[in-house]
Image: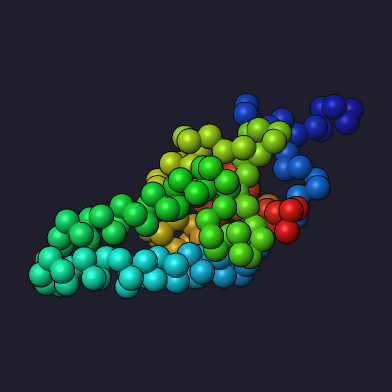
Length: 157
C-alpha cells in the first residue's frame, strides 16, 4: 500500500541531499548586495575612467556600457559555472549546486538557464520569482526551479 502512495518524481529530478542546509532569502540578498558592491567598484575603477578617457558622455548607450554589462553577466555566469559561487556567495558561505547530479556540479546549460533566462523571468512579475525563495521548502527561486538548482550553505566554510 505504501508503494502506491509513494510520490513519483519527474525524470532527472532527485530529492535534495539531506546533509545540505538550504540558504534562505536574507543570506542570498546579502550575497547579491556584495556582488553588486563588487560590480560597482569595478565600474568606478575601470569603466568610468575609460568613459572619461574616451570622452564618452552619459547621454547615450556606448560600447563601454556594453562592455560593462557583458562583464557583469560573465562574472555571474562564469564564476557560478566554475565554482558554484560568486564573490558574494563565497563571502556569505553559500553555493549553487545541481539537483540533477549527486556531486552537485552545475552544467553550462544549467548556469545559462539560471543566470540569464531564469533570473530575467524571476524579475518580471515584481520580483516574485526571487521572493519565492522565502516560501519554497527548499528555498528555491523560480530561476532555481527552472534550472534544477539549490543554493546551500557551503560545508567548507
